[in-house]
Length: 142
Image 1 (tube, rainbow, N blue to C red):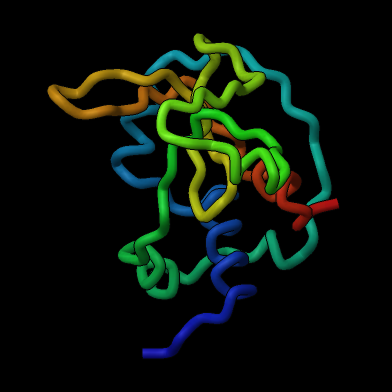
Image 2: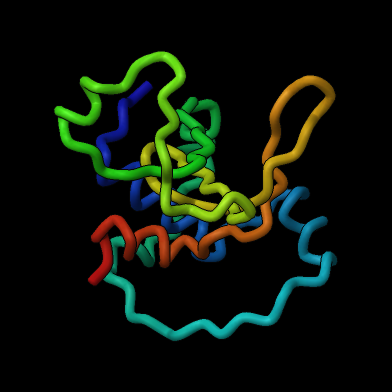
């Protein structure tokens, strides 16, 4: 089995998001009403227009990536961090009712609300960023 380099993985993911074959899951979600959004048209570089070969794309599906729900973040200097002890309350600018960010491989891809799943924590996804926004946010498209 060949190992793909990062540019090949990126091209395959982009091609899959850009209108490749749809799975049953995406076909079933197409019937659900979607909120109205406006999208601006952008010109994509040629490497993002490639159609993925189904066999090569299937090789990516079992790859595990870190999935993180980010509550909030802030900057702190080292002196402040060294002063933190058990019981210290660290204040963030994010409002308590604000959506949480779903981050995959250090890239925010969605946001949603915290929910309780039995005795565990879950996330009800409220918004998923279009793949072009994801690429723009990480500087892959200009």
